[in-house]
Length: 166
Image 1 (tube, one colour):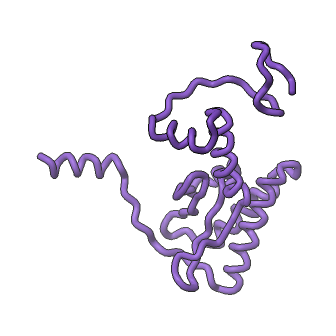
Image 2: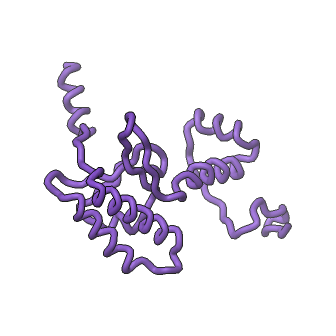
Image 3: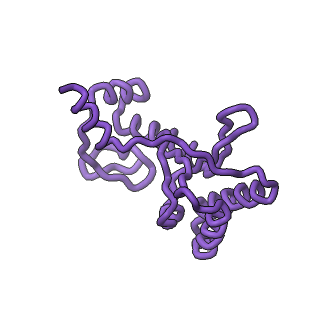
């Protein structure tokens, strides 16, 4: 194991650097349960979350015979200016499109992104390809549709709560 500048052995087999971060005591306790070494605990927790999200795209059943499309983090999907990625769990996102936007617009936008996605970016390319297959196949089978969900703007709800408390 290579030694760092302080003479201690390196913790990781890849390039690393020190960072300073302030965390809640509750999180520090959780990290201690993962690994006594805080840096290793952070790496293990991050890799655990990202391993699930890197798988790319999944259909998550939310009711019998009904699923939502869940995607992992994607710099390319964020390039679709009208598409919103709604984080529902760490690094797991629902796709939200504006009312009135046809589903096939999403299919076209994903296909366009796939054309400009570098082939060496396998993770992003595979996730986009998988998402495109899902959207296209479901559209062709006429089994994909939009359904409204309720969203709350937090700034508005906080003001409303403050008014109620007066």
